[in-house]
Image 1: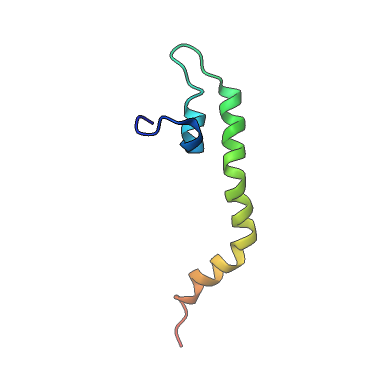
Image 2: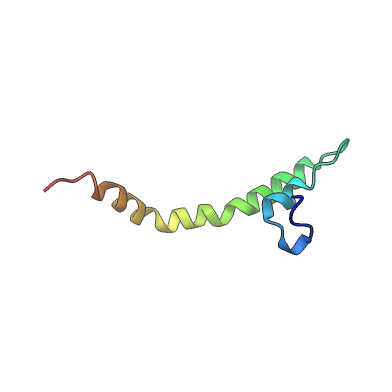
Length: 63
């Protein structure tokens, strides 16, 4: 957070962390942004789950 001062270069987690202040914390905003940040990962897992299972079980099979 100290090394990157420009807002357009910060990662999404740092932007979510910036919603915390010393005396006031916007919990509903933080949770909403956290859900939006995790949504692409969930969608990618759902779409690629078949390939992940195939890759994990490919090493367990012996011929």
